[in-house]
Amino acid sequence: MTETMLNVAGVSVAYGNRTVLDDVNLTVPAGSITAVLGPSGCGKTTLLRAIAGLEPITAGQISIAGEVVSDDRRQVAPEHRDVGLVPQDGALFPHLTVRRNIGFGIRSRAGRAGRVEEMVELVGLSDVADRRPAKLSGGQRQRVALARALAPAPSLIGLDEPFSALDAGLRTRLRTEVGRLLRQYGATALLVTHDPVEALALADQVVVLLDGKVRQSGTPEDVYVNPADARVGELFGDLNRVALDGQVHVVRPHEVRLAPVSASRAGQQAVGRVAAIEFRGSYHLVVVEPSGAEFEAETVISVVVPAAETVPSLGDETAVELAALPPL
Ligand SMILES: Nc1ncnc2c1ncn2[C@@H]1O[C@H](COP(=O)(O)OP(=O)(O)OP(=O)(O)O)[C@@H](O)[C@H]1O
Image (cartoon, rainbow, N blue to C red; front, side, top):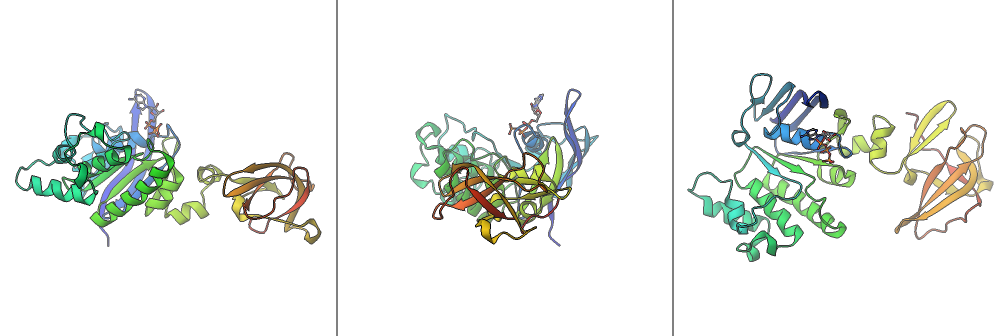
């Protein structure tokens, strides 16, 4: 069996009398990446801070590599937890070079220089290793922050929205690169993010956090394909909620298709009018108002139509194939 590197059991955290984490449970197996996904304010940063020892917990227990580091009696100091943090903004020391930033957390002097060089190479920063952070690009700064967290070989790496300050193109490239580095290094990582693409692309396990509670945990495929409820489903992008035959069905816009009205088959297709069309770059989102009596008032069904395909015009009558609508 794989060793559990992080175990968070029934953990609650309160600020004053306001509970922001409520009975949170999660485990991270050694050598794997877990993403905690949730909207702004759901408690992601608080969870990471509690794990790193920067926030006391009000209930439960946190263990790292089999050692209890937080419970109702104990709170092991951050520097004794063996957790490397990559904060949201990188938080590099502005007056230190890349090398010295990376070496900062390595306590023993013996072997430090060699270790720093290894990390500099790992993140591909040999050319800029004597520069200070101000002379680096945003992507380079984030790589320094990652190397600094990895350098002391911690049991666990915590990443707090590490790509959020970067522009879209760089974010995608760095995401791929960081994923590769963490795997190559065999790191155990907990990534907190509000970005579903980041969570799905990088993680072995996704933990969905809503209002301070874990709503669902599973593989990326699990949580995407079988969301526990519509709120979880909606975290991963546009979602149709269609009230049909007394049940609410949810379906993603790319899972339904437009069809010619003449091919309509009862129960399989909804017929309606095109109420809106949005161009989204690689596709059009076509919003259809179905007219059948079986649909509740104000039901709309959004359909992804790839850019290469013909889109209907506003007001056109069209059919939507509904075969993929699972009830929730
Ligand atoms: N030191 C604090 N004192 C009081 N309330 C706080 C403190 N830190 C955070 N909070 C509140 O706790 C809740 C959870 O905050 P947290 O930063 O953990 O959420 P988050 O999911 O990381 O959000 P974001 O992505 O916006 O950083 C929020 O409502 C926040 O306002």
